[in-house]
Image (cartoon, rainbow, N blue to C red; front, side):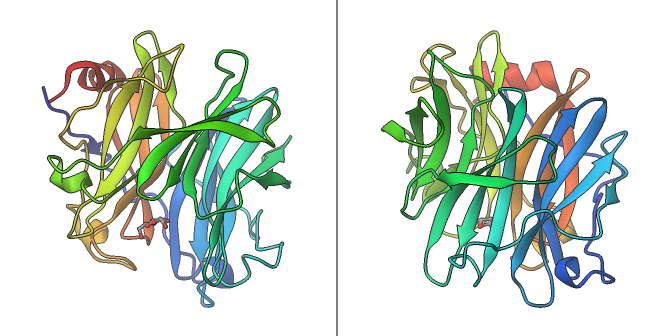
Length: 295
Ligand code: BMA
């Protein structure tokens, strides 16, 4: 069995805004959180200075968005002044929200975790670790009494655990690039929040091979022991195809930080070529079936 996400007819949904210096060039890699009947989007934006900042938009239907005039997270620690704050993933947890994002400096990038009560004001609680790492995303609940996080020490997807969200231990490689999966033979990383299903944790991830085209697929992790991969299909669920996914700031990229369940559908928000934000969907039951038995 194979699965191909279907591009939403209104996609792309969000464009750079030339009236705002900070988001005039690219808007991409967004996290979408459903809360209190609204869709809340945190998205990475680049302006004329090419520094990444994180903007916020809100929507009733997940398709039409109202943006704030100013970003909600900007470089603030000195370390990331050079390239900025990138790739938010937002996890509702313990009655609040946590954002994992990448702080990118001149030569280094760090996996940061911030906390918010209202989705607008964010306070850092620390880096996951002080080494090159990104594509980190918190599970939406504790597993076996501990917080769990996916992350990437290049080129693998790792998993780690914590009692307090500050000190992370028991890091383990979860998935590696595979030679017999050419599209994901060089590097892989997690996308949005893993989704809990009766069959296991549904993990969305991206990868690329020697030609550096970003594609996506899924895997299924054991519910009680998410260090166990139950199944990992070898085929993709989406790859660059539309003009705006092939040509943009970085060519041949579809990249997602957000996979939501809306009604009985998967809504997969993603960016094309690091420039625009779009949406692709599939019946959620088909995605789970593909993760369980897909080719
Ligand atoms: C990755 C991340 C993403 C980006 C992608 C393609 O390494 O930095 O933010 O979308 O590359 O350029």
